[in-house]
Length: 165
View 1 (cartoon, rainbow, N blue to C red):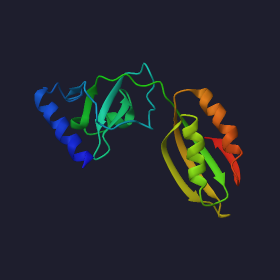
View 2: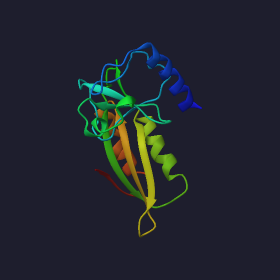
View 3: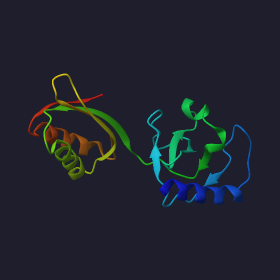
View 4: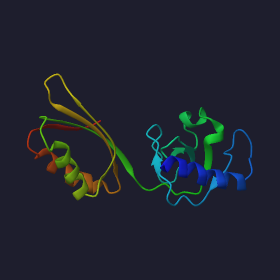
């Protein structure tokens, strides 16, 4: 299992590094190849921010701003110093409302993929009218790609609205 492999790999590195105190991360990792990395939604770290990692259970390492309130109230033994440059990624929250139909999610993801936009998270529900309400967080490296994708999304069959949150 991925989470189990992550913990074994991190435990091996943790044994080789020494603890530096309660307020400081207990370990520093410079080789994160093959380890799932996510960027925290709570603080949305950006390029140039001081960052720390949090070892999650089964979801790899979540990168937070070093001064993130959620991180500061987390278990200190799971906070690690990472040698990682935060990618220049803009996280954009969208809400898409469309008629519920077969292939809707496929069509949306095809438009986003064709514009090199990654879906970081998504959730789909139905509203009181039976329409699909899809909330997405998009990881956008180039804002022009999102500008190009939005009109294409608006042209999808049955689409009611696309709103940035």
